[in-house]
Image (cartoon, rainbow, N blue to C red; front, side):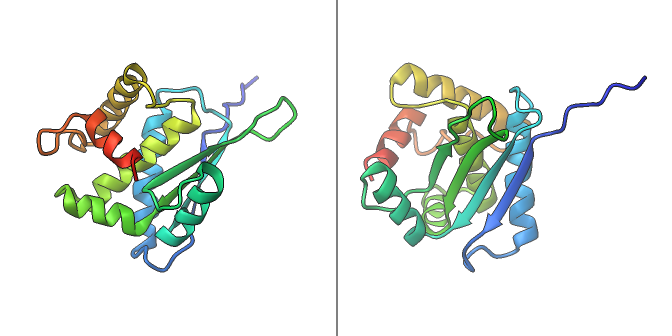
Length: 173
């Protein structure tokens, strides 16, 4: 008798803005980053949605859910899971203009910054946070490890800033 293997993590990538060019390449970048992040967790048989949109849509979501009237690079919305609910981890929403601006300012390839933020959003769905220094260090360590396996340089080695300083600056927006 063959045992059925558990289903892999299902990653739906929805493009909700014409600003995202080369959809196949973008979807592949995001899926690959999140799939790599998922290899270190128990996400088998679950799913999540990643929405690629623009600053205007993210600003509205940020204002509605966080009370911050400004766009940001990534927002995560974990599902409130119950025993009888479908195995949906949640949603990650990424804003094109902010990501492009940050990648340019930090002299990073757009695809590397996108992959980093997809991983960052995914880790939030799993309960990671960066509100306290110890939590930020744990989350940054996880991000660095995942990105290293993807061949992406440490996103926090920029202009002499530590990851906490970069995140603190982003969170003030």
